[in-house]
Amino acid sequence: METLLATNKFSLITSKTSNFAWKVRYCAALSRNTEKIGTLGWTIADSFLRMPTEQHEWRKEVFKSLLLTLEEKKYFALLRNDEAIQVVAKIAFFGNKTIRSIDSLTRTQWEAEAQLSTLIQHCFAQYPVAKFLESAFYGDNKVHMLWYIQLGRGKSVLQLNGFPVQFTAKMAHLFTHASDELEINQAIRWAQAKGYGASDLMAEIVAWSSLATHFDREEFWKTVIQWLAKTANASLDQVDLVLQYIDFKRNAQATFDMNGRTWNALYRQAEAWHIEMCKAQEAKGRAEWKTSGIQGFSKTMHLEIPISYVIYELVNSESLYEEGASMYHCVAEYEFDCIEGSSAIFTMRKFKGTEETIEATLEVNLDYKTIVQAKAKYNEDISEESYILVQEWAKKAGLRLDFEWYEYENYPPQQQQPVVYNRVNNTYDTQFIVRIILFALFLLYRACS
Image 1 (cartoon, helix red, strand yellow):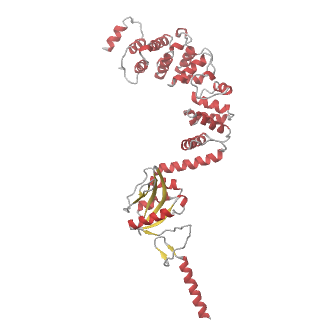
Image 2 (tube, one colour; image 1 turned 180 degrees about the horizontal axis):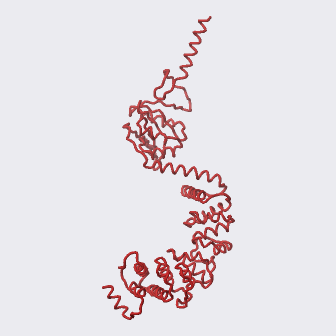
Image 3 (cartoon, helix red, strand yellow; image 1 turned 90 degrees about the vertical axis):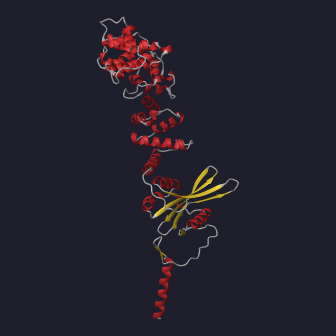
């Protein structure tokens, strides 16, 4: 039905009309793409269907005219290339901004890319435009295409619509002389870095770094480029690592800035952060283990703002790592003890309104049902309040306490029965042994005298 409709609509087509011209006219009349996917006909039909209709029907006519004229001018390499057809469709989108008639186009090139370059220049470049800007028509950013058209009409880089960076005159000049190997966003970053005094190598690194993928929060990232411009020795991998770290810090802390920072110090911090991130990723979903069966604990104090304390067991690698990262201690190293079932790790959390803090990390020796470690942040002793709560939990859960804890005010050493060997900690009571030795020496002295 659609074939018949197309034939009736274009009944003026003579027997001399080429197959390509017939295909173009046929595809222009389709309401949906019936061509076989992957064929040249499918690409042409898809390009027609993607064009706006109603008030912009003229764009389809321009696209059709371009294709037919290109065949007449023997631009066969271009017309056999799917990507080139799509570029022609984008040229047609700006068909009302061309500076020359397509009829005056002549063929001077034989390769598809070179023929496209000739076509773009013929349509839009009254004045010379940097060749790398032709890449705009290979992408989907209409603003970039408009920049090419504006520069082709003689506008300055500083006058371009929607330009994402505030350029100096020097940067604008550098931008128009960027390498043909760069894409448009890369050329912007390259010119920016060079304008701030970066070496050729560093400007190239900035151009190929993650900075060329976005222009968000440009006022901040401008200061980062100024800082990088002063850096002499660095590789692309190192710069990208530091940029990831800076982005992480800026998202976590809005006041983070580049004032007073040195490359060596920031790179060391970025390396340490990357290692920790890798550990966290490795721990995620790596191992889980059965609960020890020891009951948890919760207590709420009804003050002006209710405060709740909760003690619960950590039963996977990720939670151990997060606990250690938050508390700055090595509890993540107890992963295999938990898997083997010799130890269990518990965390004590304090909830005050919407605020949650970790008050203590607790290790329970499962063989002896004994709490053998209780540590606050940085492996410091837990607070008196936490110690009292741990005692309550131990009593309810049927656990014994065997860890050192000191009350810093009015500290009186508790009198305990001497123990020669502690089975839980595998340690000897040195004070008791010293007394035995002294007593033996005293008996020897009496015997000799």
